[in-house]
Length: 240
Image (cartoon, rainbow, N blue to C red; front, side):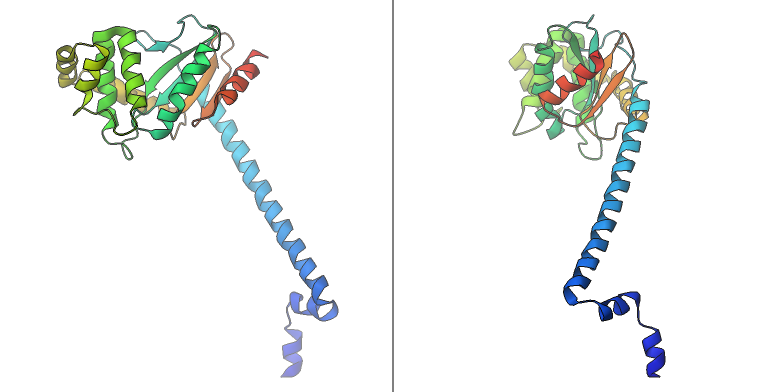
């Protein structure tokens, strides 16, 4: 009956009955704002926790290995270990920034590029990384970085096994030698090991870069195509 209906009014109905429309709307807005702030606080806490977990994982990044590819001084105090994908547009955007960072560091920082082809997004990139390893074998460290500059500089098409010979002719690296090396598949395992290593460090996308103080072991994770200022800020933190 009518009495039962009245007793079943919601809290909002009762509140609305005793205050004005304007006051009611204000109370509703306050409730919404409080909920949003609570959700934002939770999201921020989750992000901080993820960042802390990421920092713990990337501390395990291996130092420079024999036969790795270094841009800068091999005895630099700091190293930027970049896990990268030759076909990733964000990696292409980040590449000149990373090189500028090294060049402006006065010899304090060196860049080490490690393969992390994202097969689901860029199915041909893995082969490009294998080709790059062959380029390093035939054309040494200089050839590797010339090839890398070309691969990251390509804006209309990616460097693949179908067109890499054009790039080699441009930079003056022996095409036949690289082709024979690539055809053997000798660097498949090296690229695969680098992919697994990136995953073990918690890196999920590219470019995934770790700036490391080789004296203290302290690191800063830079996940994405951040600007030069962010890299310089991370370096300043590691110097403290």
